[in-house]
Length: 400
Image (cartoon, rainbow, N blue to C red):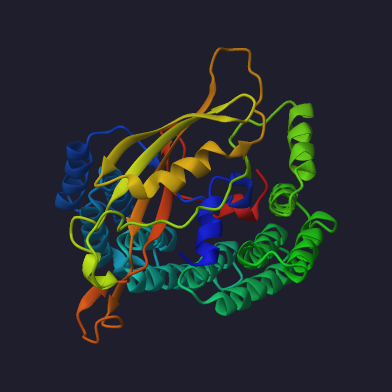
């Protein structure tokens, strides 16, 4: 797994660090057959495109949660076929479908579809609102994320810097802070791979820019930078900054949502454990393709994790052992005491073992095969609390 992808995975639950790109799916509890019927009825009666796309996303999310990744992808592709022509009238709605399609493609290992969907999503918003609109700028950050995850860190840094510049010119200070945080994450990824003094100093410099000279309306990004600094210090053998963060949250009465302060990077995985020897590319057989686990756990009032367990699975779970180990060792901010007996937050996270599709690089043919080195993709499955299902750019552009 590329270092930037691993870092994003390890910090995905740090919600203040990802106020718009928190990759979550809201679990509605509505039966799959009902969301299928709702979408079919909408299409049959010729419902407006925005209703079509909303019903599409609800059903595709339901399919994804049930483990039918291919079905979710088919649902999204069909919707794009019906609704691309409505991009001018409904740029936000179409961009949401494209974003969802890219997300599913990523979990299927379809790197090209992931890349193109992310670019199309950005271009849809750019055509609809202009290149300096906050929605376009946030989408451009997502393009940077996709380039980093696909192994092009230099391109990602260039994109983040361009977003920072344009956001400052447009006085979109939260988006500028968002881009700066992403630039810090790039250095953090290098530091995780090679924690030498030079990388440590560069990371300190990037984080100091966020912490010591914050832009307007960027308090949550300051906190995210402090969390990253604590992570760096722990890697260097010091827990002092983490302890100070815990005290800060506790003295303020605690948090009302999960805020991850520390998570260990995932150790290397061996998806082929116990399998007979042979060329790596031959071992990505169908029974290993698309394995996933849903991991549930409690975050207690003290910020400690307990009762980590696999709730559902497809295929073997031995590859998820590093995931379980990492979750157990997470440190969250203390929670706000509300006087009831609720033990804290219950979290469910979907982890998918995937190898990206490639054409012939390992076999010398043009056959579509999977890379020999797998990766783990994570998506948060959040209970339905009446919230919006899709990430909203406004959460970056405007303080809540």
